[in-house]
Image (cartoon, rainbow, N blue to C red):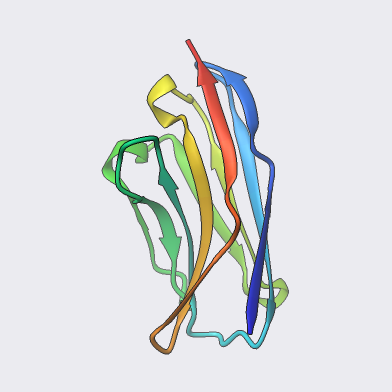
Amino acid sequence: QVQLVESGGGLVQAGGSLRLSCAASGRIFAISVMGWYRQAPGLQRELVARVTGTGYINYGDSVKGRFTISRETDKNTVALQMNSLKPEDTAVYFCALMQYGQEYWGQGTQVTVSS
């Protein structure tokens, strides 16, 4: 079983920055994909950013140029640096790990951006 624990959410003013961290434990393979998704009230969960085991990264269109994902494969951690935050970035952010057809999710951390 894989467990994911997120940290780093909170309240920030528009234009500010936050950093989210996620630590994974359990049987994790190097090919796994780790990433961040978010869900705002009334909306579907959407991709924020994800990184493969080989280092390929893709971002959701709304965060390109503002957010940066990083992964330490040997430590099974993934972080999301969020800069130039906007009120529309307000959501619950979930850490995710995918490997061999299985998906694992963290409990989510709230990010609130005030205008």
